[in-house]
Structures are given as structure tokens and as C-alpha cells.
Length: 125
Image 1: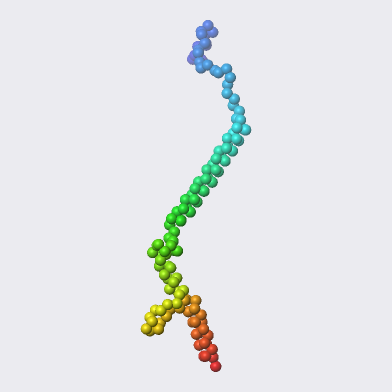
Image 2 (image 1 turned 120 degrees about the vertical axis):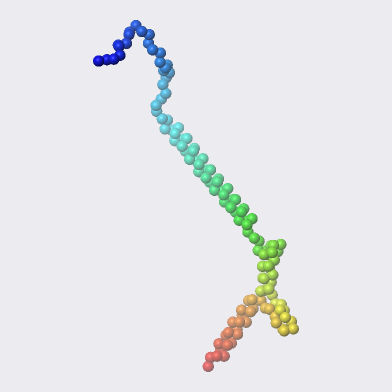
């Protein structure tokens, strides 16, 4: 049992959406997809390299700004280190009346070794 009556052949056809004269291709252009993919891949790699270079440039610049100069006598640390280096590398009087003098650290180590060798030789029978 059919609930709908059969179509009337004399009736005008129902207007529907007009179909284009040419329909679109359903095929994918593989060559174009490969070229577009390659261009995108190269762009991503280039961006990554540029960002990394920018990061390392900024990191180096930041390290230079954060570094305290130990040789610059204008800074407190620089002056202190220069004074300490002078104290351990020069001859000078600590107390002239008591005849107490400072000698460079290298010479002081040599004197200590000589004293130790002398003591060791004198203690042997």
C-alpha cells in the first residue's frame, strides 16, 4: 500500500537547485600538496632556527650584563681583588718596629718547604 499518489506526468517539474555545468574534481593534486607541505616544513624549521639564535643572543647579552667585573678597579669587588692580589704578591712591612714583614705567597711556600726539609733531616739519626 502506497500512501502517496503516483506523480502526475502533466504537472510541471519541481524546481530544485541548479547544478553547475561542470562539477568539481574529486581528485587531489598530490604535487601541489607536496609543494605546500615542503614550504610549510621549511618555514617551520627556519622559524625554529631564528628563534633559537635570538634566544642565545639574548642569553649571552644577559650573561654579560649580569657578570660582575673582577678586574675593573671602578667596582668595589674589583678594587678588593686587586688589593688582595697586591698583598699576597709583594714584599711589605707589617710592623717595622717588630721587624715583621710580609713576603709573597710563592716565596713563603718555598720557605715553609725548606724549613720542613731541614726539620726532617735534623730529626733523622
